[in-house]
Length: 238
Length: 238
DNA sequence: TAGCTACTGTGCGGTATCCCACATAAGGTG
DNA sequence: CACCTTATGTGGGATACCGCACAGTAGCTA
Image (tube, rainbow over all chains, first blue to last red; front, side, top):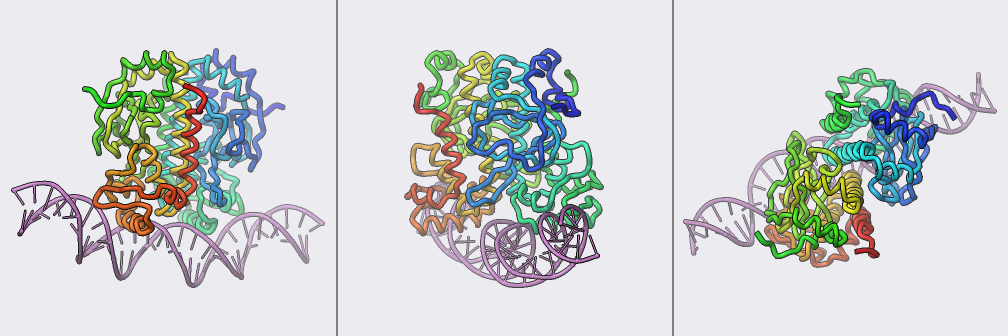
């Protein structure tokens, strides 16, 4: 199968020096990522790591009573499957496609092999892991202290950063699942944002109209995460 | 300075094969860890990694408005300073001594060196990092969905697991800072637990009377974290 | 075009937590 | 022992979010 994107559109893969990239390319397999597809279930052995190029993956923790909360969101800046390089067989989260698109995957044992033998790759993936930890940390803080409306702004911005366009295909119900709140709460918060002209939505389509306005309305948690990812790929190299 | 504990009382160091341990020992420097001491401030270069033996360190995120939330707690099962091995110069959290005691530290660049050249050490520290990620993840989930009383149980249990005794030196005010809630909320929740005979406290001393009862009252988040750390050190080896 | 389904809007009572203002008490210090 | 600081207890009003019930509506499908 061919997909109309190069793996190098994923920032991690794109950040590799030519030599490493040429090694890796034969291991990468294109995948279509469809809305709602589940890449990982908790306690299931991880067979692949995924590199989204224009899709978004959510790490979603589901409690025994069914309540859920998004822990992190991963797009073309990252990789799904950090437990593989950290030496774990499984993820404690479900990994689910939040926005459809394309990506590439690599077999877990091949990735492990590359990680062990290629310091450049290892170093890059570890720095990415640190950025992911920062995102999870910020999720914890935000869950504790930020009101829903601000959290929604943060969530929209994080998602937007991982897409090319300004439209999200996403119902309020699904956003509520991600944020771990009621659907009605999202309706109310989104209604406010719409009244203020920041977004416009209808039946599963959300259009961001005023990105700067959203950033102003968002809690500080968004900027913290964003900065961490920015310094992941320093302007100097490659 | 001598301290009355061996570094091997720290589970990570204790899990090293003899050869690695002998290499590492000369790099380890004993430290007294006093209540309230700050090991790291955000955005400050990390000079050391710390291995507590009978002390507890909290990773505390502080927002610009002063609100705070504990992200993870680290005791003799772990290491403070994972960003060092992940290739970051700083931590986004403050690391503060939550319970006084002893520990050992190693210079950041020496740790980096060991991490790069000794696969056994690298593998162990990476597995630990995964367990820490699980703890942070669970903090995020718990902050979202669990009521204060259950969170308090979880917090007490996590702290207790990292100490030898059943007494915590800790005011309700400090616990409130950790959990990111009001002091009065902690007073109320702790009062309930005391009425039920699970704990007994007075002016900064908390005694756990019924550990099993606390586990039953706690949310599932505690068990998830605990299991992750248990499987970090598989019974087979050493 | 009719009908159905999925998505969104709204209202109401309940609860956990917050914010603020004190009251009480324990234990160290002079 | 008296005092003072620090820790804990309590109450009242405000707020954010929940849970539930149901109404309205957009867009697909037959």
